[in-house]
Image 1 (spheres, rainbow, N blue to C red):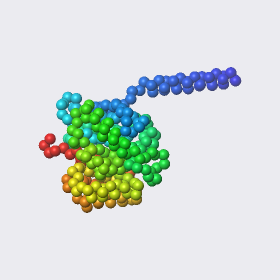
Image 2 (tube, helix red, strand yellow):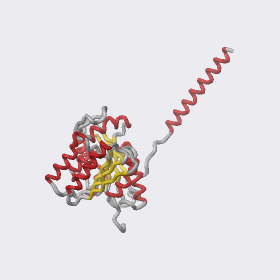
Image 3 (spheres, one colour):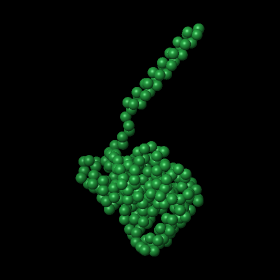
Image 4 (cartoon, rainbow, N blue to C red):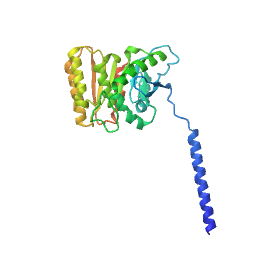
Length: 289
């Protein structure tokens, strides 16, 4: 009886080992998913010390067969936002609802935990104790230098782009970064998609920055799409409303401001809805084209 029990245990053990080996073999044989018309490469930055960024480039259908140049839509948090944005852009381009564009995702390629611990360093212009514990901060100016002096040259050299028709999109911390760029270095981009920005950050520094800009300049020849979800916390969205109202009151010459509140959407659900409308707002296809 004991001998039979021992034999049974050995057989079960061998079956478990065999199944585990088969599972590992099958997993090793799986190919990684690749999005059509995309390319990926890395850039080691001199401005953000010790960081190597993963850059994903989504090309419009027909890019290889044409000699046209295209506007570029840069998107922060590329590790989670690039695939979504590329898919939305492809559908809108196929439907001829937006211009043909190149989508560029700026990410890290080291997993979501690394992204969560690192993105604050790149997207937050300064330190603030309101930011969740575990996120680094205060490196946005260095990150902007990376975009301007390291990423732009690579993209414009290797792809057929229209540099003066570029846009940047971002959500949450990415939206805050874009708000900061808009009133600190607005010339970097022609169009902005600003999603659920943390305007309350650092005692409403973005509001102060906008006022300082208005005191010096009365013109802002840009297209700006600002959004948030109606289900987001009012302590979070009230400063965004104030941000929008201040911009409207200052009535900048040349500015096309498109604010949207998406009913029923939360901070996490709103990007997929809003990016559809944001792309249509900033890359609207001219009539007859």
